[in-house]
Length: 383
Ligand code: GTP
Ligand code: MG
Image (tube, rainbow, N blue to C red; front, side, top):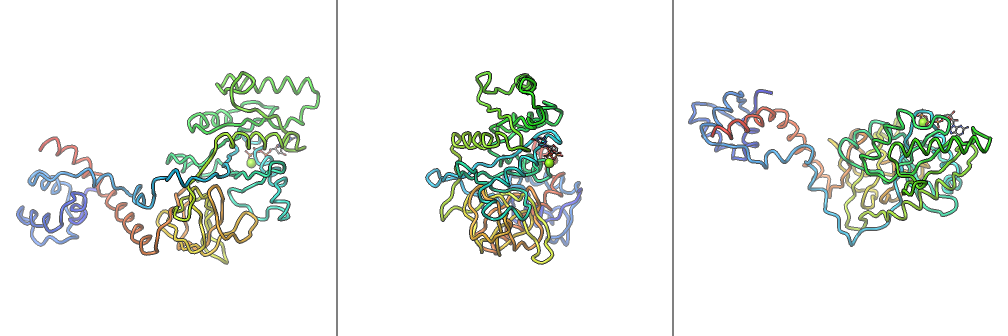
């Protein structure tokens, strides 16, 4: 990218194109148009001759924050309680999916609906005893998760770290521990597959080993006066699964999780999954972070937008609205969105289109601006 058009340079310099073209003519450039392409050397010359400097503002508006005007600061008065979002992590084969399957089957809602009919990347359960809602995020290893993590988006409230009683801490357990510490998420440990060891003394011994390994990895479990709950479970027999749910509910109650949600709160969320469905077109599974989503809302994500045509929940049932911590599959996207991208509400389609075009332009300028950027440091010093 050693070339830039006059109009984009004017854009970067935050000056009127006409002014820049006048200066160019004085320097001997004839027939310059908006689309006239300047080489790096010429840009350098222009910057030096006319004391142009790149204003900070031209560099702070980037494609990454092009949609920031759609985000509003949180109004504490409008905060409402919301269910916790829980992610299950752990070493391969330690039993993450089995736990999820068990929770799904035991969920009150699943029983009412005759089982969960479609798989979406996240789902809500209602605990059998306390009747509390919990949103579980499935397959946290997948790409969307990594992308959100990269962007510093912390969409999980609680992580359940799954450790098999037979293996204790393994390489991916350590990775998960690293992530948990960095993210600052709350933690519950589930020591699973306890049904594999039937003799009571042997089981106690194995549990102690896992606990010690946790302590050695600086996890302050309750046993040593810390606040991390450890629950021995079997997702196969269901033993203590109610305790695991209780632990999560207890922890989330203490966290007092809230999101802004009022009729005037604009919707924000994250794309968990997206795909093209043969009969209905582009669909996206979205986790709602704030606001209440309804049909007809205009949403924007990445380089595309959507007028919400319909929403379905994890049971394949039509949903009339989706509130914070809820996950819905949304129909109506103009093109496919990317998992891991943020979703924001725009007031009108026109605003959505305008912002998408602005972001696209910024992306182009950024491609070309890399060298002007470097140049700026140099000329600022020289001038
Ligand atoms: P990956 O997704 O591959 O990382 O594995 P996972 O952590 O999801 O493990 P999964 O739930 O697939 O379980 C792995 C194996 O352990 C399966 O054969 C399960 O049936 C078995 N398993 C899981 N939980 C339990 C348990 O509590 N008791 C017993 N006996 N077996 C279990
Ligand atoms: Mg699995």
